[in-house]
Length: 313
Image 1 (tube, rainbow, N blue to C red):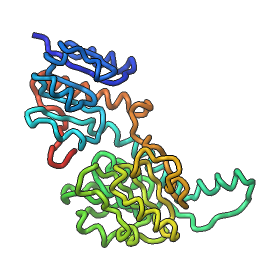
Image 2: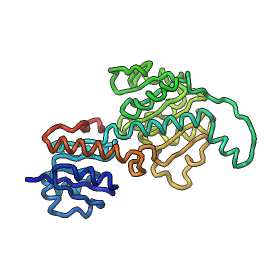
Image 3: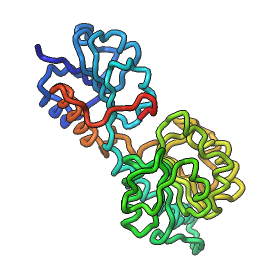
Image 4: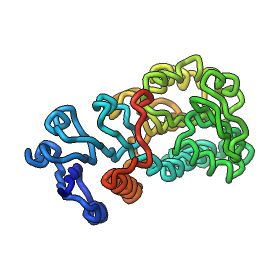
């Protein structure tokens, strides 16, 4: 009997063609609410964003493939259902975004662009060299690792924070755990967060930790907005502490009109775009990961990366 795979979301021709290569009956539904009842009843495999309501209507479901790297919103899935995320699909392009914003802040580019609007000719000081700078990546998954590889290639001295210390890459000077991180913060020129949305990292960068960073340091956040306490960040930026905060994620999100982060000094915001596959930046990589995992599970094998329900990634 041919297996049934439900694919949700809007897909380009590349994705449609790739999914059709699978040895299965493929049911495409852009709107998860419009999945035919017979498909829900028979499908064992699902790719996309699943809800509790949809899951309850799928008695034979045994594998869910996400198009996102973040998986903490899906840990409610029953244990017998294997959950896989798009691990590795976003790392390189998000790392490119991080390199861009790092250099932008080091060279004070946003301030020069503001001066251009005013036709103001002034030479700014306190410009940082990338080569020789000390960069700490808090999070050493696919994203943090890719960022430090690129940073090291440009001459930075790189440090990493991971849950457990093991297998230190050659491009990293030192690896520490979160408990040991505070000793490094005062030395760092850049602190880059690529943390998952788990309970243990919520509020990790509060006023105390932000204050441990030196005045000239740059904060990047591309992981989850709630790893930084927004009110504390606003306070330290208002006091002139930190050279810049480059945020692709924030708390709350989307950032409401009129929120003080929009106009906070030296805070540079992008609307959660560094890893969005819908923009086309990562689309083919995400689809390739999903198709590979579905091919494996259809063949009775384990997917490349399964989500740890306890950790949420």
